[in-house]
Image 1 (cartoon, one colour):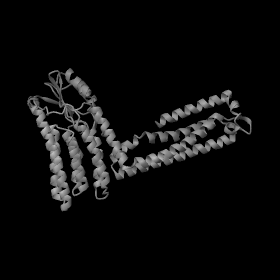
Image 2: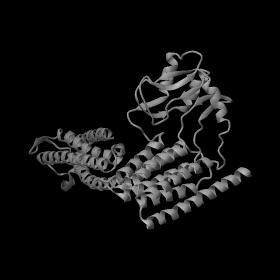
Image 3: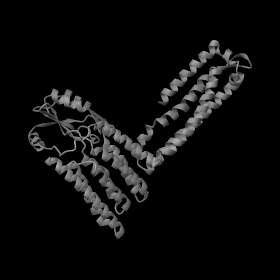
Image 4: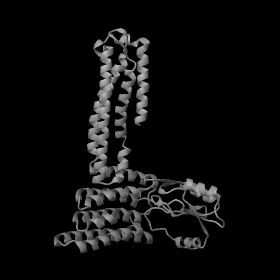
Length: 433
């Protein structure tokens, strides 16, 4: 963005200079208070503006780096990529660089002095002044933006928003609230184990950022085989280790290996685009950092649990992609897909372990389980929530010494158990119906 803005400002400068050189400056002389600057005055003003913009741009860089350092130290380094992608920061740097480039272009066209063969592009000089005033406004807004962007609530909300957008994109279908349909899965697994599997090595090392599932299915159809994923999205794969495996009677050729590698996007970092678990991971890291003895920021950890609750509540009502994918009646892809149970454990296990005797966090976790449990009657979801409930009960029994706090947690545990039992009852009634 800054590069495009600088290019546009240079083009704009040339356009205004051409307008001035075409004789338009004679018409501008009718307003001497606005456009009546001489060659020497124009040079001084443009030089001052160009130098000021470079100074302000250096301040902007310093403020950005300071915000990155503070956010990384206070929360987690994984959130730095969201700061680097900020359009406000990019636009601010682009504005100051654009004004600097604009002033240089206009400055070099001023010639003569004291009226001798003098040429001053008055319109271009006037717009340099206007742009500099706009730059002051941008600087004021940027200071406000930086002060807001490093607040914990804004950072957590931004990560949660990005994660929810990923969920809506990957899991658009609402869940049909009914019993789990896992019948036949064991029957499928048994003949798969009897096949001969040929591994397809990964071309590079890195994190799996995305997978073209339609390409995998098409390759499996073209080769009349079954593709078994060895790593899911977000996993780290090492070069020359199995990326996928093919059920063939002969080793795959190089063309098939290259095509399968091309279906995977592997990079240096995890991204939230097809990996909601990474968004959850970022919020969990912030909560763990907040609960560490050196920080001891319970309020931030509570906010993290609240936003994790909103994410998991959204997941509880979504249909997860199937593990087995077919071409008609023929099995073609055995995928590694996220599950509600796995994402629930990713969200709460480490926070629960770091909370220990922190009653506020344990109560918030119980409230999260109550909220999520009230939104689903899927048996597998309810079982996972009940396991989390049991873990919290064991932790509270082991760590909480105060009788008052223990009684408070016991009351909350009973309320959550009632919620989950009522949802189990609804599920059983729907199965009988």
